[in-house]
Image (cartoon, rainbow, N blue to C red; front, side, top):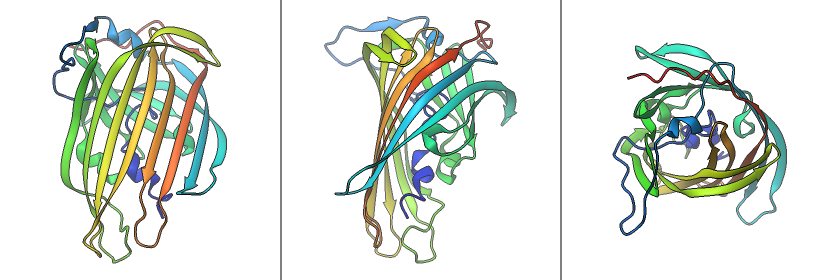
Amino acid sequence: MYRQLYRQHRLAFALVAACLFAAAADEARAQPGTRTDVIEDAHLYFPDAIGSRWRYRGRIEEWPLQKIAESKGYVNVSTVSGTQTVKGVAVTIFHDTNPGNHGPTDSYYRRDAVGVVYYGSSPGTPVERQVIPYQIVRFPIAIPSSFQQFDRKGVDFGTDVDGDGTEEKVDVDASVAVTGRESVTVPAGSYSNAIRMEARMSLRIHLSKSKRSVVSTDLLTAWFARGVGLVKYTEHQEMPPAATDKGWITEITEELEDAEVKTTQTPVRP
């Protein structure tokens, strides 16, 4: 059952689907006692010109708790395919052919002078539709800094997990941290001073039949290179047992194989 709920848990963090990271609408706050590195041209790490294309080689491992992992390889191609109006707002469309090995997805973003706002995906999930739109990546980027993305209680999960005919409620919260700059090597080459970001999400699912709760967690780490965008990400998901199911663990890695990044950027809107 939990494998079938995979998409429900993901909320489209916006990194897998469109090479961007979920962040918060709050101001970035540097950690006390640390020296802050401020990236004024942060938008150059998130190129979005129409026609840009990124090809990723992915690997996914899935296994029940205490069992041997099953490993699969796959390919995902991400393209900036055009623009669209969503909720009365002009957004940029990122089309991914197979993010996380789960088939084609369109995701919608608006970039302006203070950052990027995520407007959802197609196909999306019931949970995602209840928390969008929300801001992702705030400009300028401060290193180190951290954000509370959102903290929502009693959201409709859209799925009957325990089989009693009632769809469950879920508490969902997410945060993101910009942790530093690192050199990273992928099949497309080596990139110095890539921005390293970590996003954490938890979903506390309230089971209506037993009146107990189970918690699913997601940790995603990604590296973004100036003028290129997302070059690598890793994701670790843990889904606990529910009803008679065993728990499930999923680990995903995608690395850039090649990219064609257009130099004409989508205008930064005021």
